Amino acid sequence: MSDVKLRSILESDLETIRNWRNSKEVSQYMYTDNIISPEQQIQWFKKISNDNSSRYWIIEYDNQAVGVVSISEISDLYDSCFWGFYIGNTNFRGLGIASKVEYLILSYVFDTLKLNKLRCEAFSDNKVINLHEKFGFRREAYYRNHIKKGEKYFDVVGLAILKKEWDILKNNYQQ
Image (cartoon, rainbow, N blue to C red):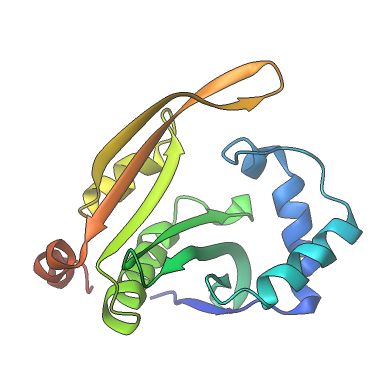
């Protein structure tokens, strides 16, 4: 059985992440799709390295970097955070990695950070919504014409899951 792990982002990962983020396969699902320069990538890394309200990891599959996952806007006030991920190496899509990452993040947010709510957003036509819903996320918002990329507007779905819901469901996903 292949193994999925999360590890801290290293400076040596920056060019790989930048290439993933600049690729059409990843940027089509992001709120921005501008080309990221090496200097911008370094600035991003400095920013996230000093941000206590977020965590970023490299997704590894069989010890190979395949994507990025993050939680952000960690809030004691709201007892919640947001999360997102992408599989940047398209050769590794469709292998169940996303499901394993989803489980790892849900466990981390609810069992380690002990937050009450995990939130996310996705373009309304993104199939990742189905994955989130399989893990117990519920649709809480529908933002019409929420993101503008070029001359086109995109609708966004807001989803969330509560700790009490995850506590009921998590045993179904441990395998």
